[in-house]
Image 1 (cartoon, rainbow, N blue to C red):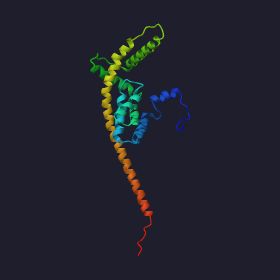
Image 2 (image 1 turned 45 degrees about the vertical axis):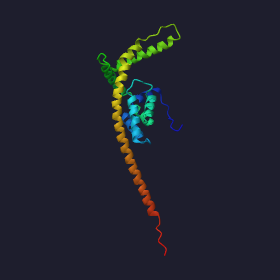
Image 3 (image 1 turned 60 degrees about the vertical axis):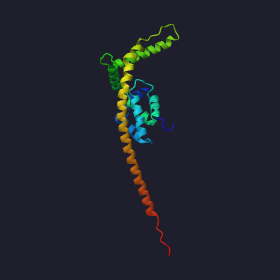
Length: 218
């Protein structure tokens, strides 16, 4: 493979770089901006793709973000690669903030008891729900009874509020990022086209200077 790494990364290295990329998040953001500007598509389509990626990163549908952002971008006639780039808005640094903000907003909108919800509580509720799923799966092949308390608590107190608040916050963040991406890509493509025109004019001028002028024959 052309782009295969020479040094194989250990799972600890991959885990560490998923939280803090090599060179820091600043360098990672600069690289994503570079990739975004270089996409060969109209600025409006690229911006719609960014909206799709940012929007889906505010939902609690972990594991489905990549596929769903592609579907949304396709439905909106946006750029799919831009949607994938936009989905990185949800990363190990931002997800804790997104989760707490979405759950808190969702609980208020759904009229649930107003009490602070921390990341520890959200993570524990996710863990209990997945533990119930695992237990119920193995219960299909044994005499154990199924358990639904953890899943019911997860749905009522975390998932539904997270989804409700996330849709609203994701729409707001997506619209903001849409506007930013549209301005950046338009400006970049305008500068790039201007540079290409200047380069083409220089080439034409050089060719014209090297072309001998034939005089008129009497």
